[in-house]
Figure 1 (tube, protein in one colour):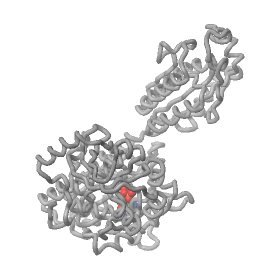
Figure 2: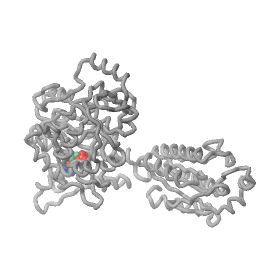
Figure 3: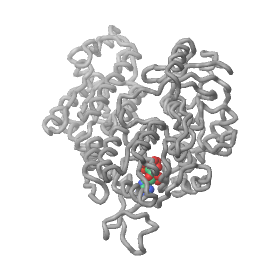
Length: 575
Ligand code: ADP
């Protein structure tokens, strides 16, 4: 524990003798282990470094129930978000989890022992109640409800933790501070008042103006404290954001602001989350905390309405101001006033004065199309960084996946498309044909259904990696089963990031034609039973229901088919 002039008492579980850490590390080798999920890892880091003070472990049922119902721990200390360690029934049996047992908590990325938990409770939470009370609704449009329903295991384990070490990082090490380190840093800078700015998004001019106004109002310095643990799915990745934040730091007068990263797993819980953020920033040594419009809001619910009112977060923080030990700096929506070329909170804009805003959706549209982003909205360095990570569609990677029977013409179409892309230029082009990827993949080489599926998924993985790097990938495989094709679509659209453009083309040439023109006699061997389970003869081809285009070699010429694919890509802005 360490006391400082501001920030209150900090439960820094790392502030211990080296010998104790060493002894714990030795002990950790003798215990059962829980390998943490990404969220649990973020939570544990903030428990052990004091970011979640006064927590000293994962919540037991008394604290959990009390937090869910009243925003307070069982001892009535304000703490609005449950911090829990979820395990499955299988984990309980396999690890013989029981009260009093000590278990090692390991980092999922490198298996390092980070802490030892002494279990004081194992309980089954009511996840619907948790969603309703903490998030405001058990609505699957809320990302944390999806998380609760699909990721959270059915039991929670409570107990104090003994810290061994913080998780190791290889990125942005100079920007990572524990609360103790950040408090020390402020002391060194002789900063007495520090206004913290929470963010999970790229920062633009509005945010610089907002933070400077807050600093001016309170004669404070500024802590830019972005979340780099887990944010809302689909947010801009933290590498891109940190490049943006570094660019923004140059726009502050020298010595006014400091950038530090927060390894928090956000819950997008709006008002409760704002109170939580305030407590966390207090622990990191800030004296003031900005809460603007729709703080930590998850967007729209299933009825198309915002989950929380735009200023609900400010109201809840304000309600608890006497016990927060950090002062909220509330702001209404910051908006641009062109006549004076400045940003102002909407409530300060005189009546009748024109204002301008660019919404997040509009910004994403401009990045996608390459449309200009004006100087009044952002800075060149920020826009350049965003454009590098989010290239316009003309520069994005894409995957064209041709599926159809053996000898349906899919490979010929693939080769023709390759020449079109080569001629167009601008992207590297990769052609993934079955036999060119794997020499063993001759049509009459017998693979089990599972081997076929695995081959297909390897092709999808390679295609997604190439597309992520901006290539035009043309893949042609038989892919006769819906499940396999769905898995391909998932891999490519989810893993390839902005290059996750996936087009499924069904080459629906009738089998009679495929068979008649089969110069290698593969169908004939299949008919004679020499090849068994051959698609179209011994095994069905399920026609895809979600093809972006269906073409047929007997009805269309190759140039016509290629042209129809080119038109499809042009419509989506990729050509
Ligand atoms: P989150 O609130 O989920 O972290 P952001 O990173 O977009 O999302 O916002 C960070 C903080 O800045 C929040 O307090 C939010 O209310 C505030 N904020 C962001 N944009 C504006 C704006 N244009 N006007 C006022 N406040 C804003």
